[in-house]
Image (tube, rainbow over all chains, first blue to last red; front, side):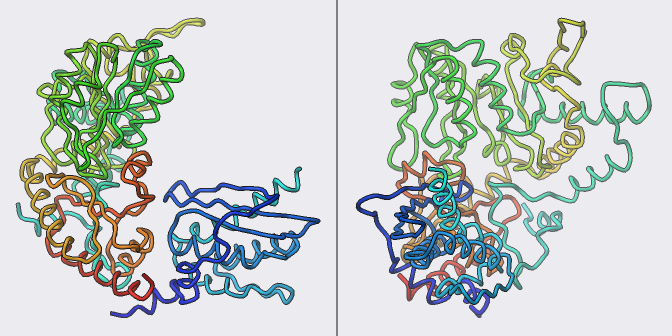
Length: 147
Length: 406
């Protein structure tokens, strides 16, 4: 059989992040914690963020879920670490567009590995898996701003 | 049973999904609909759509006859003693909520116990959690055996003289366990408790006799038994229903409405507020005719064979973990090595095979099984051994596909 179609979803870099997640664990020292789940499928993520002077100093996650949700969390933490909060939010917007299947060009933002998740847009049932970590980040940043 | 002939009655099954003939193994979530049901809905909307029990025009009379005729079909289907005991609801969830709200609010007090099991569907957990909080009653869980069955000794131990309600599913939507509800009803009655049986996963697949079970309440859904969505049934013993207050007010259920006080219709209509689910009930009636024509015993036997065949074949796949007892209803819940169920379901979907992946509306049971999610293949009268072969091939493919990763 042909795996061509599936290969657009399960790119090697995704499986690498799934197998070897970056930033999995807990932050020591000051941080905020966001819990988010996907009630339709049971995926759960706990995201920890350390934000100082409007910059994401550290980001770690833990949780359970499928390859798409966990690799997305791994990539997301990698992408936002060291970035200004505004850039992180901008990335989240771009990611959301990516999931709608829209091409997004922004010369100031380098998505890196994240672009590998573009194939998820062809699997509508899995989009929520990919966006879970980003939603958690947005919620965390939102709460941080309100404090 | 001629499965090929049965399949021909289901138009939806004859299509390709992602380039492969559809293999639909998700009937525990919702069943497919036979031509007879689809045509009945069409006939209703084209021919005599009207509100029931009001007005005197011809269409209204025809609609009322069909609606009440469906109630009689349901009565015979579950062997209730009277149509007064057959209430149409939106589904099993609404039926259980009606009992919890109405019966619970009137009868539960602090110190009283509501007994359920860890294998229940959320719809047979949360209504009891809520009414327990409201009334001060205590929610208690019957323990399960490691294979996901219930021992009557444990039922006897858990159900005490303080128990007012026992609520239990007849067939587990995850484990496939067939619970001894008749015996548990006897134990409940010995303690003067009432029993509600969640028949969502049993009524579509086996003969139900509520009088033989001696169930005080029995709830099930139309859409899992070849009927339309949005229609279900609450059966209750007349004496209990008579003493219960409605939970929805207005529309079909009223008798006299005064400025400051009103009275209700008699059973079963006092529990059917608003414009009833007319098309849904008429469609359910057609589904019951369809199932009766084939025979519930034949359907059960067919599914039993499929489940045994599936268990045997699936166990040949390396890394296969199957949950639940050997002796089971027509479904198999499983995990394959370290492949997450969502990933597995996506690979199977690419092969045209529809299975369910997730927590199956049974989060407490997932924790009991110590898993975050599982995959489930569930069977109905239209499934075949060839389709199970396709599933097993798909599972091999899944292993192959994720082989490098794990």
